[in-house]
Picture 1: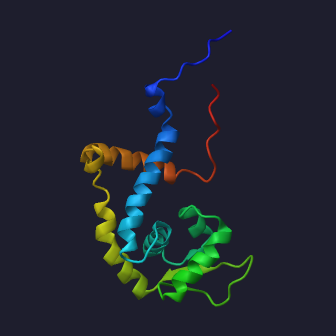
Picture 2: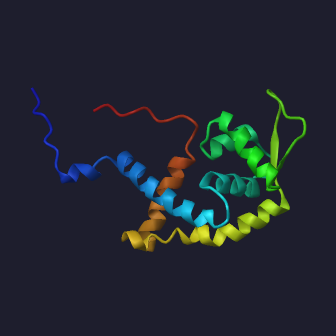
Length: 156
């Protein structure tokens, strides 16, 4: 019969997914603070940058890209639309293609927020040098942009 695992300090960092959750929360707070000066949330920022890169993306695809439930996307876009940052087709409906586009005002706000947002790439305050930060960024992007499903959990 296997012996029960005796947990140590080393175990606190031994589960990469838990470390990623903890780090993501700290980094999200940092980005939230920076974007608040531009009256944006991280998700709103994500919507604007996706629309800048992929014009006329659909609401469903946009929801997947910024990791929100499709039901949450409509009120999110309604708020951005009310601020004049995005525009949507007047003929929206279930089962129809619902393209969303970035307005000139949305692009201007994104450009204003871009410098401060990219400044958060400097992780030296956490003891992470630029080279390591680049490796981490690459790994996170691979995970974030992997196919729609999750890999099967490993057995162990």
